[in-house]
Amino acid sequence: MKKILFSLLASLLLSLPALAQKNIEFYGGYRHISGDQGLDGFNIGGGWYPIPRFELYLTYDGTYDNSTIGTFALTSVGSTFVNSHMQEILTGPRYFLPGALKGHGHLEGHLLIPYIEAGFGEARLHTDVSAVSIAPVQAADTAFVWQMGGGADFRMYRHFTLRGDLGFLRTHFANSGQGRVRLGVTVVWSARPRATQ
Image (cartoon, rainbow, N blue to C red; front, side, top):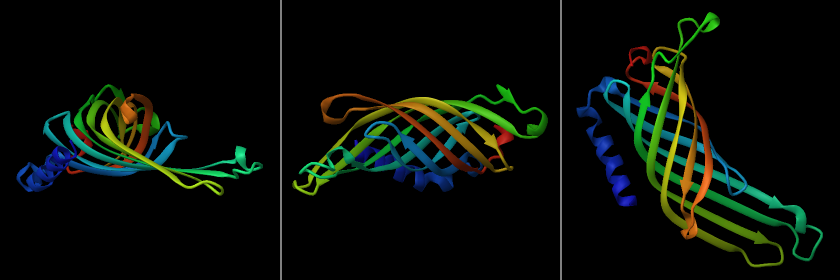
C-alpha cells in the first residue's frame, strides 16, 4: 500500500507541469487527531481540479503526543512517560459546494465555500512507554485507514484561503478498528482564484 501511495505522489508531482496550472493547490497547517491521549501536529498536501468543484487531493499528517502518567509517581514504579507518533497519508475526492453559504455584512466580498470529502490510505502509529524502574517498551503498527468528513474554505485573498475541516478517521491498528476525530486548520494557496470554482 505504501509503495502505491508513494507512486501516486510521485506521479502527481511529476505531472504537475503537464496539468493545467490554474487547477492546482497546495496547503499546510495544524492537525489534531483524537485517541492515544490526543495527538497534535501538522498537515501538508496538495490537490488538482480535473473539473470545476471537484478535487483529487493527497495529504500527509504527522501528529505527536508526549504524556506523563503521574498516577504512579508516588510508587516504586515512578512516573511513566508515553510518547506517540502517528503518521498517515490519504488520497481521495473532495467536492466543493460554492454558493451554499454566502457572506453578509462584514463578510461581504469574501466567500465561505463548504465541501465534503473522503480519503483512503495508510497510517503508522509508533508508541514508546518508559518509566524509571522498568525497561522501555516500544510498539508500532502500520495499517489501512479511511476518513470521511467536510469543512469550509474562507477566502482571505484572491489566491489564499483559510480551510477548516472536521472528519471521522477510521484506523485499524493491532487487527482491530479505532474511531477517531480528525480536525484541522490549514492555509491554502490555489492557482485558481477561489471565487471562480
